[in-house]
Image (tube, rainbow, N blue to C red; front, side):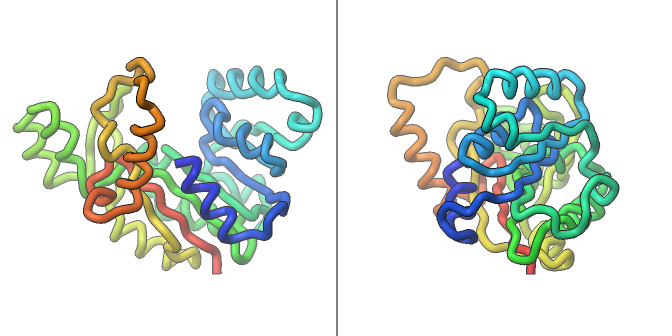
Length: 233
């Protein structure tokens, strides 16, 4: 999905513009660090102390110029109004966070407020319209039947979390003044791959197929994850 994000950034902002980026729930800082290396000024917000430590260690290995462009903060995405002024960022990332938030609308409204006009809000969420796919592909027919009628599921970490339906998120984005601009499917064919699976020899072909499927109906609609991009009006 890095290519999808780069595409949206390139389509929204002049080439070479140094953007102010907020990465909410940055985890180990992989995406934030990638954007800092590209020349952007990045703030990573994370509440897990272990993740923060890993991100700080990775940042410490970078050249001084990159270290100066990236700031790591401990905090919750629901507290952006406390930490940042309205319009503080050109791009806000919220990837793999909403599934842990029972009521996502207030969080999303807060993220929209810290976006500058024309700014990009990038969401990566579990696809609530395709929850039956994973158990179905594993042959768990009882689990698949149950998944049709819920947005709740247990993730690979064993945590009970929730998924989002694209139609509902589209309405939410419109309501907070950052209407949906583009959306993609992520992990269309690779959702059942183990986290520790070895990299296949034909990785380039795999990525090309996933990239194509993530942009193409009906495949993107049954992806494990959805990448939605809203633009602040």
